[in-house]
Image 1 (cartoon, rainbow, N blue to C red):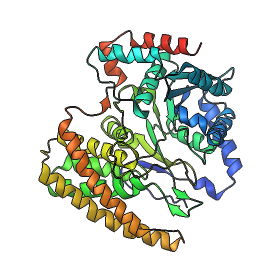
Image 2: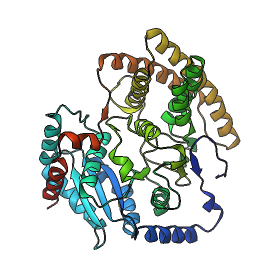
Image 3: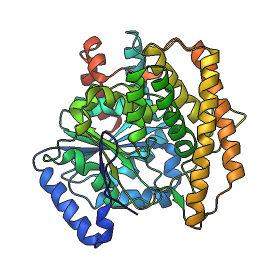
Length: 420
């Protein structure tokens, strides 16, 4: 399934180890990471909703795998989804199993009163802190990690990965931790095939982001917006731009803005685009197949499911284009959505042929209906973006520190008290 071809402006790290003995590879990988950890400090950030504790079959397996590694100095759980003390204590007790004499574990209780007061202190300085969700949770947990001052490399992955194993974790961290690579940011990617349905998944990536970005490259070129052409070409280089798994250096992480909505992944890629030269960026094939919870389409409700995901991602791209000098209006956005739609139909033909030769189930009718919905969601995003005066990005911690020099001390105190 892996190849060794390099395309685009960033380095692609393939899963060539699959040709050989898997256990031998894992042993070698972890031995290298243990050696790296003697010279730099590696932390893992886990965004976790309370509801994910109710899925022990998945989360227990993730915990069991993490427990077996020895190269992590710290695990920070960005815990949200409840303001109830009893439920937070339940989570504390659950994640305590990761604690060792060499590895610290802390929960950042995003909905707890102490962290909420910190949000209020920041907001009093007219600094946007976003809305409740994964992006905001990741942002405040990053602030805590920076406040600790004992971290050089940070890896992030979700807590709903059904097919999780230690190879995923090790491969996610290795490029940013390896001193010989000089990578500052590494994005994970993977195959998305349901083994039970024998069908392709990853609808928003396959049917929206990839054909949309691909269409925008040509559109920006034809209109002479060459900087935006390069920007969209960079996004097109990523095999799975919406993957929630990445690693980066702490120095880079301090300086990037974080989107608080479903635009988190594409926003992060955009921040990296502006701050890191291409030869210091990589993407890595993490795992033979990736399975996690699936979102509903929700065509009639723009506040949930794939509907909200597509709207949030589109708003980010629209706001980005406006910030780089494109005067958007109804006619241009209407052309963009129809250009996307025609391009998406071509991609569907490619997916159909790919599924056919691999004996996968492929409902071409449903796929085409889905891109019709996505086309309409672009217009919803445009209508919403016209009413919003600012984007959804939360300022970097470097920026926050200018206005609140005491913020790290307050964060350390709040998290310490919550975890005592």
